[in-house]
Length: 137
Image (cartoon, rainbow, N blue to C red):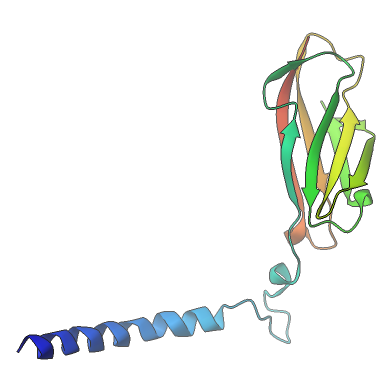
């Protein structure tokens, strides 16, 4: 009797999982010929990590900052601003990432400033933007 119940539970649970399997196959990221939504899966989104100095750190005017950029083809895809002031960046390839460095504007003093970084891409689905705050003394 217990084995019949167990068999029934297994049969019902496998029957209920069929729509989930079909949905996952249908939405597996393969775009249609008509351009239906596959573009986001055709790129590897950039990743911006390991921000230095860390969030809310106290720093001097003109201090250097750095971060890692993964999944980009070239440093030209990167841009940065500090309080909406464009900042020049340098990048060194360190396999599998770029070590990116910049300097805070020297004229910013006694203020909090957001460092905004952006990795551009051909598709807006593949772009990445992050930022963090520092306290400039």
